[in-house]
Length: 361
Ligand code: ATP
Ligand code: MG
Image (cartoon, rainbow, N blue to C red; front, side):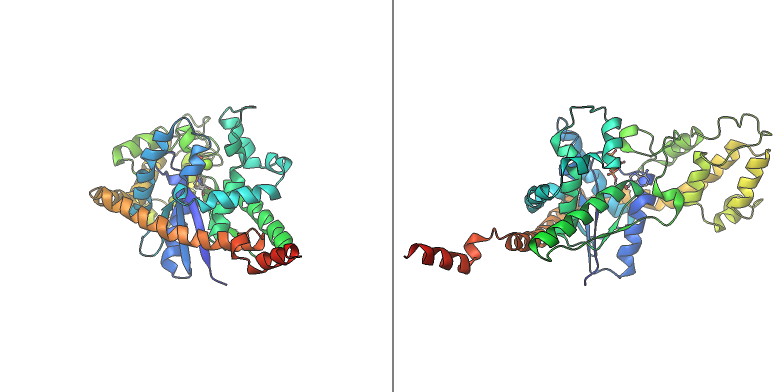
C-alpha cells in the first residue's frame, strides 16, 4: 500500500511555534525522508469558515500567511502538494455522504469540539458546520487515501472519528476507503505546547502565541513576559519547573549542544532544572537562554520568509497548481465512493439494461 500523508492548518492567523513543534517541523522531516509516496498539505479555509462565517476577509488574508509560513519552514512544492480546501468541491460531496454514517450523539462526545465550543462561547448557537467539522475532516483525510496524519494531540478525536467512518463505510458499501494512523510528536512537550500566558494551549484564537514570522525583538519581549512559577519571587527562592512555561519550551526546543554555546555553566537541561528547583537561579537567565535557543531555530525561517515575500504571485501559483493536483486525487476517490454506494447511474450499463428489461414486458 502507498504511504500517503494528509495534514493541514486553518488560515485563521499566522502559524506559531505550537504548530511548528506539533506538526509542521515533523512534516518537513517526513517530506525530506523520502519515505512517502505522496504528501498533501491543506490550507483548511472551508473549515476556518465554520466558526468565522461573518469574517471571510480574515480567512482570505491568512491563506498567503500560512503558505509563506509553510514554505519558509521548508515545505517544498516540488515534493509536497500545497492546496486550498475550498477549491476541491469533491470534499464537500464526500462529507455529505459520510454524514449519514455518524450520529449527533457521537459528534457531541468529541472532546476537542466540546472544548472549542466552550472557548468560542457558542453555548447553544453552534453553527451546524462547526459542529460537523470532524466529518468534513474525515473527507479531507479519506479523499487522499491518507495512511498517515501528522498532527498535534488535539486532533486525536478527529482521526479517531475518521477511522470509525472508514470502518462503517467499508462494512456497508465494501472495501473502498483507507483507515489512517495519527502521527503524534514523540516529545511530550510538543504534544500541546502551552501559550506564553501558561494557558493549556498556544492558540491563534487565544492571543498567546509566538509566531514564526515575529521579529527577534518581538520574540524577546514575549519571552521576557512569559509565565513562569508565580511563587518564584526572589532569585534565591526554590522554583517549580512543572507547569513553568519557560521550561516546557526548553523541553520542546533546546538541544544538548546549545548549553556549550549559550550557557556553558550547565551540562544539560536536567542540571539547569535542578538548579532552578534548589533556588539561586533567576527567571531572566533562563529566559535569555530560551531566547537564544528559539532565535537559532527561527532566524533561518524568518530569513527564508523574507525571500519568499518578494514574489507573492509565485506563492499563489504554487497553491493553484497544488489545488489542481489535489482535486484530481479527490475526484478519483469520490468516483470510487459513488461506485461503492451505487450512485453511479449513468456509468452502470447493468442498471440501464435491467431497468429496460423490466419495462420491455
Ligand atoms: P484555531 O485557534 O483557529 O483553531 P490553532 O492555533 O488551534 O487555531 P489549527 O489550525 O487548529 O491551529 O491547528 C493546526 C495544527 O497544529 C494541528 O495539527 C494542531 O494539532 C497543531 N497545533 C495547534 N496548536 C498547537 C499547540 N499549541 N501545540 C501543538 N500542536 C498544535
Ligand atoms: Mg484548532
